[in-house]
Every structure is written in structure tokens, then in C-alpha cells.
Length: 441
Ligand code: 9MR
Image 1: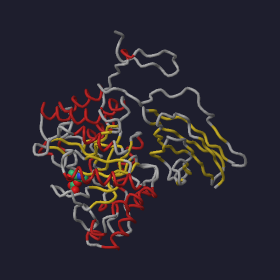
Image 2 (image 1 turned 45 degrees about the horizontal axis):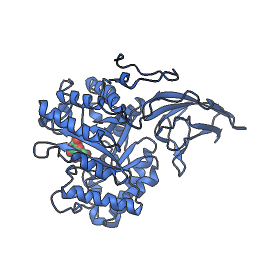
Image 3 (image 1 turned 135 degrees about the vertical axis):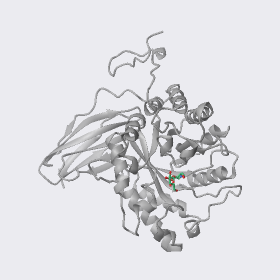
């Protein structure tokens, strides 16, 4: 057999022998990317000065979720006063490193600021929709997937909605939140996220399933369902987990494992992590996995040592099980890993614009690529970036763009006095360069 790990170079003309393409990745994200998936982690702003912590994040993961910093109490501590400082520290770190960001969360019964927790009725409904709109608008273009609504169903056998001040505003509060989120950020995938929805036969799982089925039937904008996947001995990984993920995917939504942690240690923990990873890999619409923290000591339930790295940042057996499983994935269809060699011209200078916008390629991955725009000319110009279906811009940096209603056209200029900005495109197999125009503002 040929040597391992030799990938055909772009434009090299050689056709890779399947048996030779046993490329083995050495990081979680690298291994997840083999099958076009991402591997994410929950990040706490308060730990960003810990270099072991940031080193592992930088190396292993290609998606981040703010563990608490985008929640309602953090982003709107007083009504209509929004603070994004801590959330931005996480978002900017991620985008600078070409990582995706999962937004968590826009509407939730828990971690509400005091003013909201005391509200009811139509005032609360309005405040909730305002929150969704303002936060999703602020992060427009930067969020891969939003947990629009979190944990809205009751535990136990009732299959009912969870009682909360939001639920008491009327049963349609969830769809109202999704519609507001779609209007605010048409490029983000919109997810419903919950826990204890892993076992297909549980009433809560069935209830969420029926809601998603109803939303799809009535055209409520929902793109994905998040399965938190907090497991322990009382709530082990169910044997029908794959069935659950597949059944939801069959409704026409993506599924994502959003907060994975499994209490335990050693081989037993490692095998449960392997099972969850295999279940996701077996469902083509399971697009990625996020673990809920880096090291055991970073976990919200550190006593259960539920994560992939120990307190010193060493890889645990569970880490190796996940890496090995991801590496064994069938590359399937997609990913598209080979970008085309010919592209449109790098520069577009529209007549009378008085400015030039130049595109240059950034990093490329199986599912997305980065692009950079440099602008020269007199002050007060604005650049239009158009991407082609099924491409979507999922993140931007050094710019605060606005969007047309299709979500395909972004109007942007560099922040401050800068002359460059950048963005990440999910390409869906279409590697065509975005087209640029530049005009006087
Ligand atoms: O990990 C989060 C922890 O730091 C917070 O104290 C807690 C407060 O509710 O929220 C934790 O994250 C939760 C997530 O936002 C939603 N699903 C359950 C997670 C674990 O409790």
C-alpha cells in the first residue's frame, strides 16, 4: 500500500488513490473537517488570560460558543442597555482564528436580567423580541448558528412546554422569536436547543420533534436543532441516540450536538464519547459537535470530570476515542476539499467609483474559506460583496456590514480608519470568488 497521508496537491493533475488518502488529522477540528464537520468548544471570557486554555482552544477547535457571555443577563443587564464587551472578546478571538461562532442564546427562561425576570405579558413579549432583534443585529454576519430559543420544554412525561414568564406570554412566543431572529440575521442558521432530548422514546424528545415538524409545515424559519447532550450515569447516552438525530434530520433541519459533556473517566467515558461521535457521523445533517468546556476543571460540573482534557490540559482517553472516530469517518459527500484553480479577476473597479477593492484569498477549509478585501481610494467609499448560492457569509471582521434581504449581498467598509476587512464564506461546494464593487458612499 502507498504511503499514508499524501494528499493530491491542488492542480497537480494526479488522481489520489483512495487507499492512499488515509490522511490522519492530529486535532479534533482537523479530524472533524475530514467529513465536512466542525468541532467546537464552550469558552469563558474569564479564562482567556490562561495560556494553556487558549492554547488548546487555538489548536483543537474550529467553533466556539460563549459559555455565559451572550446570555440575556450578560448582554442586556438594564432594559435597552446592551453590553457586548465580554462576548466580543470571545467572538473576536474566534473570528481572528478563522473559527465559527455559535450564538447562545437569544431567548431563555433562565439567566434573565432582573428587570426581565420581573416582567410578564405583552411588555415582556415586546422586550424579548427587542432583545432578539438587537443582539442578532449586532452580531449579524458573525454567527454560524444561533440558539434562538433554549430549553422551552418541561422535563418528565408531560410533553408540555415549560412554565415560564416567556411561555405565559402565549404559546407562539417561540416562533415569534425565530421570525425576529431571521429578520435580524438572515445568514445565520436558527436552532432550537434543549437537553434531555437524546432518547427518542422520551416525551420531551417527542414534544420537541412535533414542534419542529409543525414549524417546518407552517414555514416558521427554523434551520437546526441543538442537542445539548449533558450525560451522566443517571442520564447515559441512549442506545437510540442515532435514531433521534436521524429522525430530526429527516424533518429537514440540521442537527448539532451543542453542549456535550459526559461524566465519568477512563474507558467507559471514552466509549460513550465514541458512541456520540459515531452517532453524529452517521447522520449526514449532523453538522458538528461542541463540547461544553476545555479541561475538566473548566466544567460547570467539574466534580464529574466530564470533558476531553484533564485539569492540566492533557488529552484524556475520551479525547483519543473522539479523535480516532472522527479520523475514521467516511469523507462522504461533501466535503469538497479541492478549490478550483481558476477564478475571476482579483480586482473590480467600477466606473466613477473613485476607489478600488481588491480581493485576496485567505485560509480554506473543507466547508468554508476566508476572503480579504483591501480598499484604496478617496475617503467615504463603500464596498459591496456578493456571494453566490449556496455560499453564505457566516462571519466578518474589521467591518460592521449591512445586508440585503437575500443575505447574499453585504455592504461594508473597514471599521475606523482601516483599509481592509475580511469575511468567512460557507461555500457549499461552490468555490467561486465573491464579486466586489466599490463606490463613493
Ligand atoms: O456552563 C454554564 C454555567 O457556567 C452557568 O453557571 C449556567 C447557568 O445557568 O449555565 C451553564 O450553561 C448551561 C447552558 O447555558 C444551557 N444548557 C445547560 C448548561 C449547563 O448548565
